[in-house]
Image (cartoon, rainbow, N blue to C red):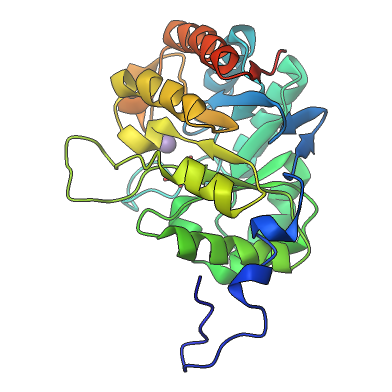
Amino acid sequence: METDKGDGQKNSRSSSDLLVDRHANKENTVINVNGIEIGGQNVIIIAGPCAVENRVQLLETAKEVSAAGANILRGGAYKPRTSPYSFQGLGEEGLKYLSEARKLTGLPVVTEVMDTRLMELVCEYTDIIQIGSRSMHNFPLLKEAGKCRKPVLFKRGLMATIDEYLLAAEYILSEGNNQVILCERGIRTFETSTRNTLDLSAIPVLKQRTHLPVIVDPSHGTGHSWLVPAMAKAAIAAGADGVMVEVHYKPLEALSDGLQSLYPNEFTQLVKDIEKIAKAIGRKKLSR
Ligand code: PEP
Ligand code: MN
């Protein structure tokens, strides 16, 4: 991996002594979120709606994913939408509903932060901070995440090579936070039959190159709910430490990403199938 400063000079830390590098840590990094281990022997499932839309939507969906066996609840309160006229999320009101859903289900929560000015506020409410694909190159935001004491679910940029992705993760670790969960979520290619091209080969590559947990998001990776179970199962078979899946109690009414959101019954079936795949490769889906 090149760590060229851009002027031909090399940085003092060479590629082999990057903090993200597999050689920096002999053991895999295992991240403990309220007793849930990510990156250990067991695989985990994160599920929930794309966005927190209202109290009822979040609580109903949270109850469904919890009953199905999800380990962690997701839901965006600040949404990075392509159009400024699309639903942008409920902001702090959404964070409050996430807290309520945590209390109701006992599931830890993960939610995205897009703005350095909101890092402290989001950290107060969430168990895991998400940094989204579009923010992968936002270095001030990465440094801020590196200073906080919460695990970071860090998504691969949609146009980022693995080298660029790992150097971006290095920004978080270099500020003192090594609680980073990598997440493959699809990259942009010439292919249009899927929303993105899910790079499943990134899983073994990242596993070889780093000691960090690797999860996969087949929802944004494909853009279509019917493709999600196949890619989620393939991700676990390929060695991912977990998956993050969008589920909505009424996908047809979703304010964002309804097309790629599973119905609760589809998610229930997927959890059962993941249990079987995990077992087949000598792992277990972390029980609830
Ligand atoms: C998300 O997971 O809520 C999201 C916006 O995904 P991405 O950043 O991968 O597009
Ligand atoms: Mn989404």
